[in-house]
Image (cartoon, rainbow, N blue to C red; front, side, top):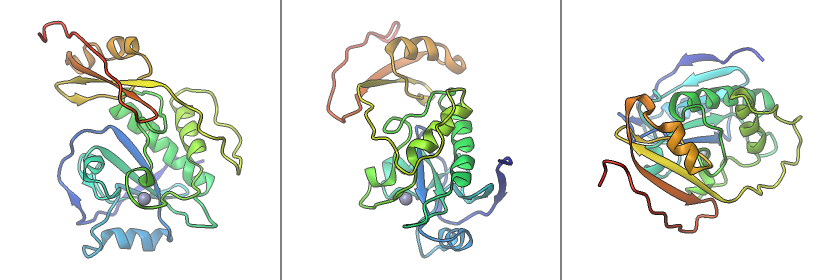
Amino acid sequence: MPSPNKYWAGTPNYTSGNQGRLYLFPHWTEGGFAGSVATLQNPNRQASAHYVIEGAKVAQLVKESDTAWHCGNWWYNCRSIGYELVGWTGNPPSYDTLDTCARMMAQASRDYFGGAKLVHGRNVILHREVSDTSCPGTTDIDWLIAKANEYLGAAPAPTPSPSPTPDTKSGIWYEVHTSQGWLGAVDKVSDAIDGYAGWNGKAIDGIRAHRKDGKQIKIQAHILGGG
Ligand SMILES: [Zn+2]
């Protein structure tokens, strides 16, 4: 695959700034490339995404430092990057399109998550998980994430299969906080403390744990110097 061939398209549909870069949202367009870009540039539609992707072709509509209106959930919009993959019912995003998105998501992990592995439900969220929609439909999300992790140095993604394996991941994951905000998530407390200690010169001043099944969990932490 060639490198992503990105160009600036722009849109009036965005909000300046962001509340952190914690989540990546792959979507599907339910329309062709040009029509989807035009729709997301239409001020009457009140919708956008950072990118529209088809094969190696990438239109950027919103700067990553600004907030795109892509997931119908303001909290997540302010904390995420949205990727619209050209595809629709009966014609899901191609593996070339997924490959381009995987490269971009790997780069986002390097830029915002310290290169952390991408995990569905942790730092990759689906539109249908936060809004009343079926998006991204039958997009092969498992392969997309495996491919992104391959670009981040994990084992190669499997040969594309039409039947994705069920999500059996479970357990607890952690986030740490510094004066720069919440940082990328990790599997172990020790990874959080060691991996982010002094990250970008900022001390850790908070930590929180999540259960992947969404149930509540209590943790107690004592931050040195934090009282
Ligand atoms: Zn969507």
